[in-house]
Length: 170
Image (cartoon, rainbow, N blue to C red; front, side, top):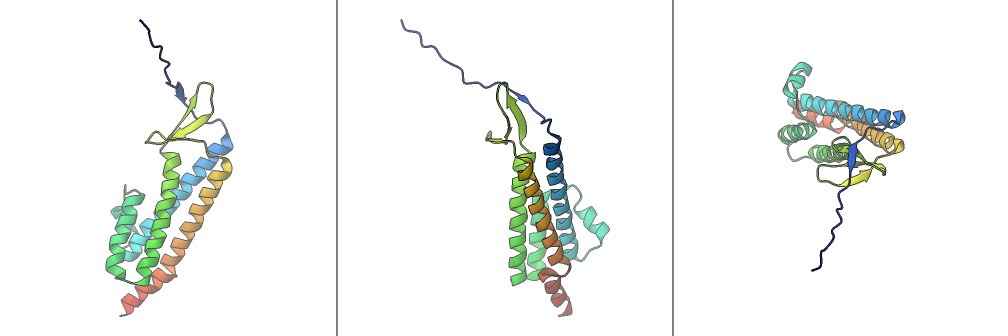
């Protein structure tokens, strides 16, 4: 009688928090920049709905990025109709979504380390990737910051402000 021997491929991992203070600070910066973007999404709701700051903050309390973008899409269709401004705003929202996805892949994963291996981030689907570098995180933070500034500029004095003004003047 032959006995098959089996080798377990189970990995032993433990939760891990990097000791690198620069890496942790870069994660923090990226998270803060993302919340700045969410705030400007809230302000975009304020602008499109024509409501006060307090009303906008109450309306968007506990709303995540996806809910904010969806609310903007609904309000924008009503406020802008089928216009070039609507298409431009939708493009900005797609960029916001892509940036949120990049951030979520880092923040909503968990960091673990094999007993004799390197630290890795695992997402909700079990996909593993190496920890990002400080440079990667700074680059993402800068990309989010730049996009946030653009969205806010368009909301306050760019194509969105002009389209809404034109609607109000009509």
